[in-house]
Image (tube, rainbow, N blue to C red):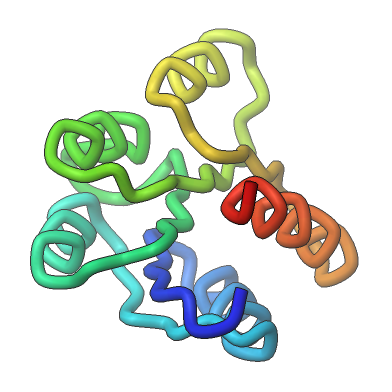
Length: 125
C-alpha cells in the first residue's frame, strides 16, 4: 500500500497515535487526522485520497456513518470503518454505506496488520 494517501477520522488520541504509527510504518502517506466529521469532510474536500479510516463513534454532531454517507455523495474514496459497536443495527447502517472493510475494536498490532492486508488486497483487486 506504498504511497497511498490516507486520513484517519478518530477522536481517541491513543487510537489516533496507534493507527498513525502502523499506517506510516506500512508505507502509507498520512494526509491528516480528524477528530470530527466536519474536520474529516474539510480534509477530504481538499485532498485526493486513496483510503479513509473512519471511526463510527466520532465526536461532533455527525457520527462516522453519517459522514461516510456524505462522502459517498461526492467521492468514491473507499472507507474502512473502525468500531467498538458490533450491535446489529449499527452494523446494518454501516454496511449500507458500502464500506471497503470494517475493523472491530479493541484492536492490537497483530490483528490490525492482518486486517490491513485484507484491505490492501481489496484495494488492489
